[in-house]
Amino acid sequence: MDFAVFSNGTAIDAVHDLTGPLRLYEATVPAEWIDYNGHMNDSRFFQVTSEAGDCFLGLIGMDANYLAGGHSYFTVESHTAFAAQAKLGDRLFATIQLLGHDDKRLHLFVSVHRSNDGSLVATGEHMMLHVDTSIDRAVPAGPAILAKLADIAAHHSQLPTPAPVGRFVGAPRT
Image 1: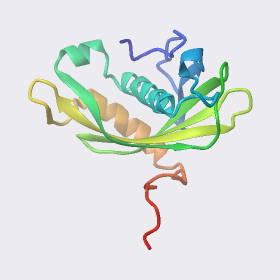
Image 2 (image 1 turned 45 degrees about the vertical axis):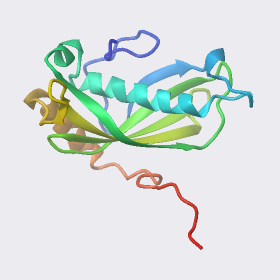
Image 3 (image 1 turned 60 degrees about the vertical axis):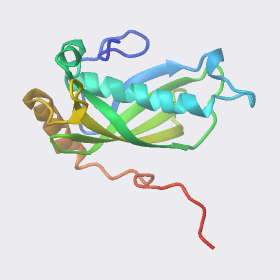
């Protein structure tokens, strides 16, 4: 998989406006994503937020060579929230905000929007661990990746925390 391209094949530029969430992913809702209710299946929202996360990983340097060197990021926790329906043919885009990181972890927030009006369709919050794939253990990321994360974090730390961050699933206890 080539992580450094949009789903439509457009290359990600080396320069991005870091003063806001990064717009790194676009897709059109295909027929196979539509469920029995006539709208995008819930699993596909996770797919979109996951693929947007892959674009982010490509941006920070996790490319085919990095993977071949035995390192990757694994998602260890996710939360998807739905704000609106997406239907067949809807154009979507996703933005990513780096909420935090350390040498082994990434905390990302993905917002999925309808392209025609910018309305929010869904969000995804993901925690990822940097892993040595030969031993399946968390290890520090390489210095080049950590430097790119630090650069993004310097800007994204100035952004407001999205309201859904840290939400949990559960019914009120009685």
